[in-house]
Image (cartoon, rainbow, N blue to C red):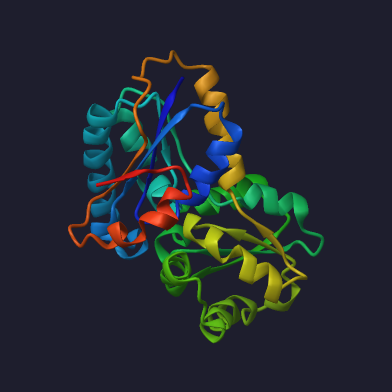
Length: 261
């Protein structure tokens, strides 16, 4: 069986892990690396993110020996994907905002994007609109607070609705924002906000890229020569020394991880 290494700055990539568990054959090994020491990536300089991702994933490849790496982080993917691919020896799947999907779903031709500030300013995002949504107006909001809210929901199952509404108001209050009918989630952390978003904004089509990332990983693994070790447990590893994730072993174990380091 294959082994996959999933990478994010926090718990956001666990939404991708859940989809990987559904899409990949039973018994596929999945390890997780959370760079909690530098969370959130959206507030870091591009050069720091690029160097950080390259170093961590090169070392993680040697340690975990995956057959495939999934960068389950939009910010890291839009900044460091090409550099990481050059630094490691296995295929790498990135995560990008589902703007193409949003262009297919919208009826108003006004689509929204919620992401980190680092993601929405990337040329890659503008290229996605140019190539796949040229007939749409794309309104974006760099929602710094949403990643923190997602981390809080993961831990405590509680949400500050007023804070969520404020972040959404920044998007809807833009010119033509009242015409948005489809919103692409450009940060994997936001997966954990989906139940609240769908409940409180039922008229909006919410697009989560996690299932598409899992499907691409499935395709890439079928093309790869599997060489990983089998029969070992899956590891959840964090870079922070705060031990914060050790407090949430039950939640993390729900995604198939019995070892937290």
